[in-house]
Length: 399
Image 1 (cartoon, rainbow, N blue to C red):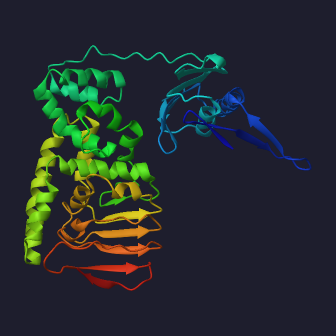
Image 2 (image 1 turned 180 degrees about the vertical axis):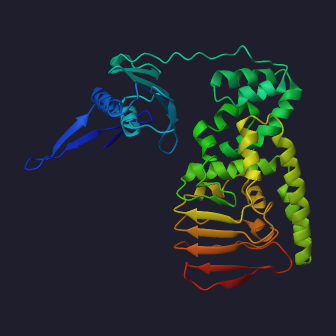
Image 3 (image 1 turned 90 degrees about the vertical axis):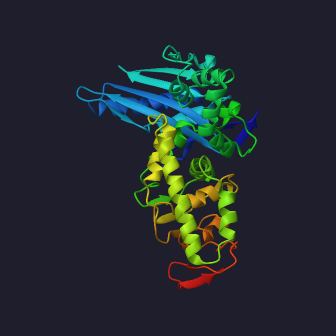
C-alpha cells in the first residue's frame, strides 16, 4: 500500500523469494537493503565483463509519475561507453520510494567492490553526503545575447537565474528572449498570461528534450504518439504549436479561410501562409543554432509528415493545449498531399476546425475509439475519407 506524506509517496518495496517445496518468502526492503541489491547487481555486471568502473548519474523528475533521467558510463580497458538507462534502474526507483522525502539527484560510482553514493539533498540517516556540483559561471557574458540563450537552455537553475536577472535591466534582450521562448512557457504552464520570469517553471527538462530525438516517434515522414503518456503528448503539441505561434497568427488565418468561396482558394491561402511560416521558422532556427530549442525546431521542420499516429495514446491534456490549432496547421506545411491520421485505442483527439483548412483534408482511420470529426467553418463543403476499424469500409465525409 502507499502512504502519502506531504505530497510524497512512500512505497513498501517487497522482495519475493520462491524455492521449490518451500513457502514463498516475502521481505519488505528498506533503503539499506535496496543499496545491497544495487551493489550485488553492479558487482555481477563487472565480474562478467571487462568493465572496471560503473558510474550512474540520475535526475528524478516527478510529475504524474516518477521518471528518471539517467546517464550511465562504463569504464573498460579499451573504449568507454555510455547509456541513457541503467542495469539497476528499477532498484534506483525503489530506493527513491523507500525514502521518507524526495531527492532531486543521485550519483553512484561502483569501483573495486566499493559503492560510493551522493545525493541532492544529502541523506544523513544513511550517511550519504550531498552531491558537490561545480557550476562554471565564468564564461557568462551579460552583453552577449547568445550567452543569455546558452544559460537559459543549460538546464542549470543557477545559470538560468543569472540569465533572467540580466533581462530585468536589458529590455532589448528581454524582448528577444520573449519572442523565442515565451509562447513555449505559456503553453507548458497552460497560462496565456505567464511571463518570462516563470521560465524555470515551464522550460523543458532533459527527458522532454530527448523525446524529440526518438526515431520511433519522429521519423522522416511521420510523427507517432504511440504509447506516449499525457505529459509526453502535451510536450510535443506545446512545442510544435509554440514554434508556429512564434511566427504566425492562426486566428487571422482562420478568418481569411472563412471568407474563401472555393476549394482552390483554401489551397492557395494555406500554401502562401505555410511558405511564410516555413521561411520564418528557418530564420529563427539560425538564432543560437547549437541550442536545443533551435535543434528541435530544425528537426521537426524537416519531417515531411504524411502520417500522424495514435496508439494507446493518452491525449486528453493535449486537446486543451493553448496552441493546438497551431500544431494542426504545422502538419501539412511540408507534405503536399493528404495526411493519414491513424487513431487506435486512444483518447479521442479534438482536431479543431483547422482540420478542414489544411492544404488537403486528412484521411482518418478510427479503431476502438469513438470517431470525432470537427465542424467546418467554411461556407462551402470540402470532402475527406474516413473509416471505422482497420477492416471497415472507407467512406467520404463532407462538411
